[in-house]
Image (cartoon, rainbow, N blue to C red; front, side, top):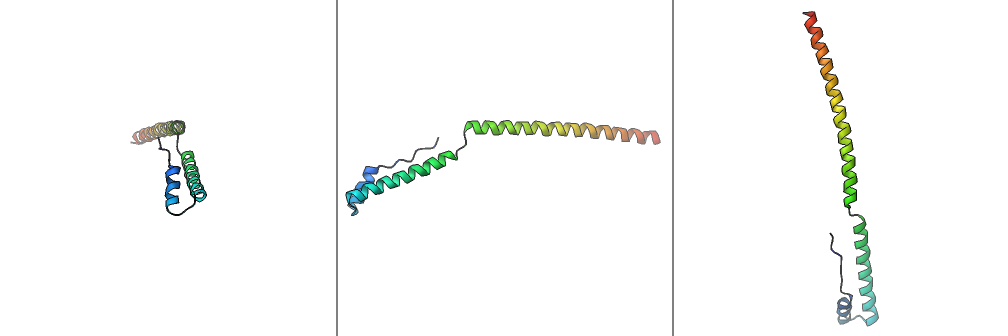
Length: 94
C-alpha cells in the first residue's frame, strides 16, 4: 500500500516566518503546498490497479487462452486428418 504524503504545516509555516514571511503569508503557503500534495496523491491513487482489476484481466486472459487452445486443437486434428488422407492416397497409388 502506498504511503500517504504528510507535511507538517505548522513546522513549514514556522520556517517561512523565519525566512521573512509574515504570519498570514506563511500559513497560506503551508496550506497551499499541503493542498497541492493531497491533490497530487489523490490523482496518483486513482491510477492504482486494484485486486479486482487484476482478477478481471486474469479472467479475460484465461478465456482468450482457452479460445486459442481450442483453435489450435481443431487445426491440429484437421491437419492430422489431411496428412493421413494424403498418406493413404499415396499408398494406394504405389
